[in-house]
Each structure stands twice: as C-alpha cells, then as structure tokens.
Image (cartoon, rainbow, N blue to C red; front, top):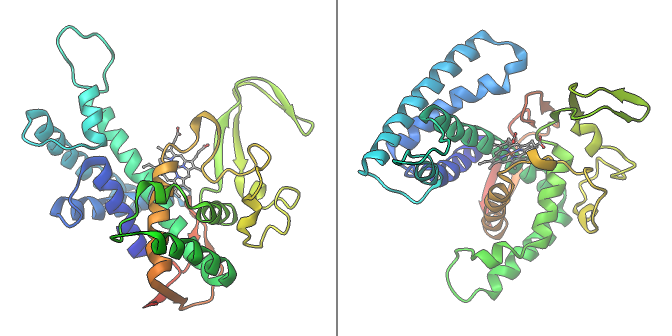
Length: 304
Ligand code: HEM
C-alpha cells in the first residue's frame, strides 16, 4: 500500500502546489528526488551519513528544477493557477514598492517544505486507515453506508462535489480516530513563552518543550480503552488540546484541510469500489519521525 499511497499523495500535492503533470517527466524526477530527500528527515535521529549526503544532493537537484520552473513563470512563458504562482505574484518586486519580499531561495524552501510535510504524512494516514478499517469491519460497514448513500443520491457522474466532500460526518470521525490511534507525528516541540507550572513542574521562559503526543492520545482518562478503534469518541467535543492529530494553536498544521480532502476522496473511491485483505499480520511501528506500519501493510485488493 505505502508505495502506491506515496505516489498518489505526491501527485496530488505537486499538482496543486506547482501544477506538475501527473504523468510528466518533471513529476517523475521530483518524486524520485523527494523519495531520496525524505529518508534524510525520517532517519535524522539514526545519524546516517549516507542518508544525509544523498538527501542533500537530491535537495539540490529539486532546487535547480524549481529554478527553471520559476524562471519560466517569471518570463511569462508559463502561467498556472497554483500555490507557486500566487507566491510569485505576491513576491515579485514591482517598481516603487518597498514591501519585504521573499527571495527565490525562500520561495524554493517554502515549496519544498509543503511537499515534504504534505505527502509522507498523508501516505501514512491512508496506510493506517486501511489497516484499521480492515481490522474493524463494523466501522468499515458504517463508512461504506455513508459513501454509498452519497453515490445513490448523485444524479450524474462519479466526481465528488464540494458539498458532498463537506458532508461526510462519519468519515471525519474515522479520520480523527485514525490519527489518534496511529499518532503519525509522535511529538511536537514548542518554546515556553513565559514561566509556568504544570503538574508541579516548574517550566522556565525560553525552555524547549517536547510534547509526547502518543501518550496524550493513549491516556485512558481522556480516551477510555485507548487501543480500541472507535470513531464515536469524536461524537461529542473533546477537552481542548487532547486531540493533536494535526497539532494545535498558531503552529497547527496548515495543510489540515488539504489532507482531509485528499483522504476523504480516496476513502470514497476505496470503500465504494473495493474490498481488501492484508497479506501479513504485524502490528510493529516503524520508529521514524512519521510513524508507519513497519511492514508497510501489504494488501490484496479486489473489486466489490
Ligand atoms: C494526514 C496528513 C497530515 C498530518 C497528520 C499532519 C500533521 C501535522 C502536525 C501534527 C504538525 C505539527 C503541528 C504542531 O506542532 O502543532 C504539522 C505541521 C505542518 N504541516 Fe502537516 N500534516 C498533514 C498533512 C499536511 C499537508 C498536506 C501539508 C501541506 C501541503 C502540511 C504542511 C505542514 C507544515 C508546513 C507544517 C509546519 C507548520 C509550522 O511549523 O508552522 N501537512 N502537520
């Protein structure tokens, strides 16, 4: 699953951010370079010099590809309605303006940040979701009912409309429960803005703080029977900051709506058209920055 999920999420994100054609040569080059760049992040804690070297080289190749895309756009030989174009429109220097603009280096860093932050997380979310659905047939059945209901009331075509995507209450709960149980990003960090005391511990202004999100998401006083996959936990509003699947506060994930949109569309087609079965039973988690099933959860898929 994970390889297919990786390709799918990469194509969606690279298309939205900088209009790379889903089957084009640039898309393929970007995808293969970013799969070399990612291990550098994911294994940062395992200190691998090989990963670091090949990751930096892949980053430089992506920078030079971005240079040529940006130059085509600046010359006007290419125009697209995408995120890169809105950055370029806002950050091109115009005569008489003294507003601070992003440099091309900063522009390229922003694009790479979105690509890197956006697709591996979404791939992991889809992989866990497929695993949890297979392990919980009653949840799958209810989810399928929601999506078949959408299909049955549609008068034409198979493309989801904006209002259909925004009216999937059970799917939203399944996504949240997936992110709670799997906790794809296991920790977040913050710097204390002021002195404070928490549970009797004194924290000083300026200290770096690591939040252990796995423990919060598996705290039985907040989520009773925490190992159970139970989307109904999200029926009622939760205590603030107890669900941190996309983080919280001003540094919360800016890609939350895009991620939910991608997952909802994927789920719709998956549960309406297919059934699947895992090929291996293994609950181990890969101990990397983005938590994935260690065996990448191989499955066989059949049409319904
Ligand atoms: C299921 C998919 C995703 C999950 C689970 C996820 C989760 C997270 C989490 C937990 C954080 C840290 C928030 C905090 O510290 O409070 C984060 C940050 C971030 N995410 Fe996501 N994310 C996902 C998809 C995306 C997508 C699609 C994009 C963009 C295309 C994106 C871009 C970012 C960026 C740029 C940050 C850093 C924000 C900052 O530091 O100010 N993420 N994400």
